[in-house]
Image 1 (cartoon, rainbow, N blue to C red):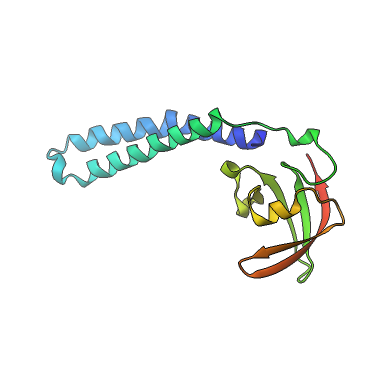
Image 2: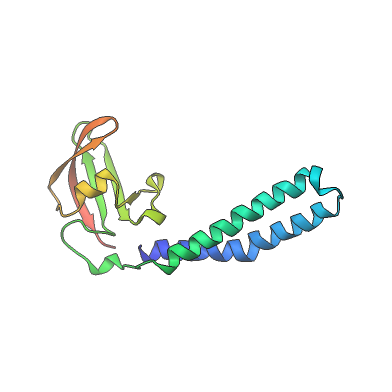
Length: 151
């Protein structure tokens, strides 16, 4: 996991514990004051939210507990974990930039590519100027690596 990904999880954990958890506890207390719990939709919704929050707290703590934080700025050369890679689609000439990250921090819409994805696996070990072929759900795609950065 990158340092930025670890920091984002740490911030989420702090927010869950200091904001979300107390808010749901207050919501449960308020819903209890409304009387009969068996037909109290607010109470059941708050308990469900509490269950989700507690589950997410445990999940984030587990991820952080076993995380290996890697500083990609120490790397150079061929594509490795943490690299920011700029690609050109050889068919459409569309330029895209992705950072190869661990599964917990992957978000394709933000340009964070899961290291286990087919594209990331095809890129690992390649260098600037290389072409890669990737089998996607939409068919075969060819990309040329324009740049590899470790910032």
